[in-house]
Length: 566
Image (tube, rainbow, N blue to C red; front, side, top):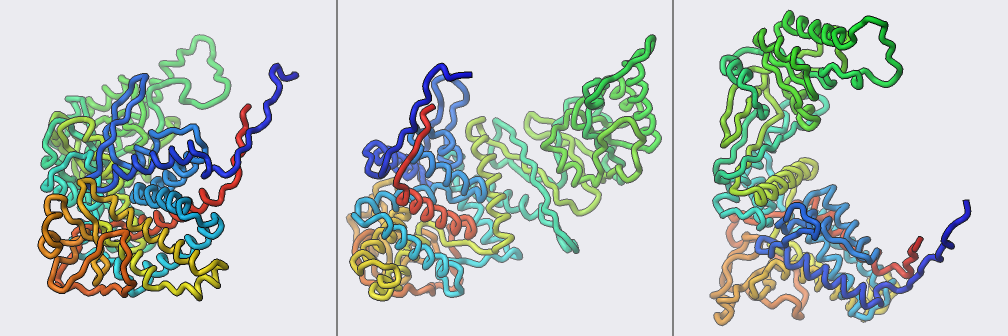
């Protein structure tokens, strides 16, 4: 068939970073994300013109997904950051702000794009080798036998999301619950291959955050009074459980594909119902106490089993199937046309009722040490409750990342200023310039672009008009509140950004993004018992640093954009 409209040629544009519209949109994106960065970041209200939910957030995954641009160059950067967030759940805004700042400062510096790319890669390798080295001054080891640093890490993630609307006491409470739930999903002293458990999150609206709690086992929402009356007495002993993953509604659609032949005079519905009742009789004979189905159960079968004292739970949904299988040890049965093998049955130690706010929950208690737990989150309204649930899920992911590499990084901007000071201290422009095929002046200019970008991220944590400083002893980040700016630094500075260091005699500071002589940062603290108050995920931030620099290099390296207009 011939075309009704001639095919339009593709549009080709060169040097996207010389395009004023693209540069303007990159600056707007940077300002939007920078203003959302950190515990005091400004919230963003997201909605569309055709209705739907109004979302209040400062979370990178929600913000970036809601931002759409007609410029594919901008979408390329956005997609790269979203890919990092989908894999690591944290440090999305850090990666985005650093990437966009690198691109902006590299363009302003006048360096050739290929030189900027080589220098950025070189400084990135310096940072990665330092962060992974034994003498790293910004890495903290995590000890799983002591929950202090785990709670600090969790609290840092949760407190960085102001849309949760939590007080200091509520942040600490939720942080402890997040760590408790995480530890409950770890199997203890189990030989062979280890399978991590799962935390099921339930939200209850209209109650104080301090009413949130963690339960071992699984809580399932129930509405049937017959279930509840029976369940009250089932709170001891190993109770047999059977789990079905197929529909028991008696529909023909559940029989699979193909042609069904029905003989004349045969009532097909009666035949299927008879088959279902045979299944029910076997369950009663095997003394099953809990009958669970992912989908719908025929009302007649439900009535029969309940009359025999069996608790029936239908429409469980696919999300709860995995945790209930892990909890009970049952094997899901996928057909009703064969007898249930003995190996398919699972067990629970007891079934009890939990009244949580307005919800009545069935509490399934494990027969042995369980790696399934339920986190019940309470909050005052739906909007903040949705954000709190998302943040707790991200916190669990961050804690799980620490299992592979049990370390964290100093937060509050201290890691960024330490990396900048390290790069300046390691600077050997003559040798490095020859290695990178650039002049010494180009090397020094590229180094300042990279270091200023790191320091800009640290400075972006403040949204109240205060000053950001770096101390010339340990290279930590300090913030001088706007109300104390008239005082001398010795009296206006308290703790550094991560909380590890405290203002002491002999310390010297300089404002960020001002020149200072290179120095070797001391990692020792005046107080050997001091603990950092703000920590970032080592794995997530290391990857975010790499993604930010590599994405910036990709943006600087793009020469042409070819767009199909058909």
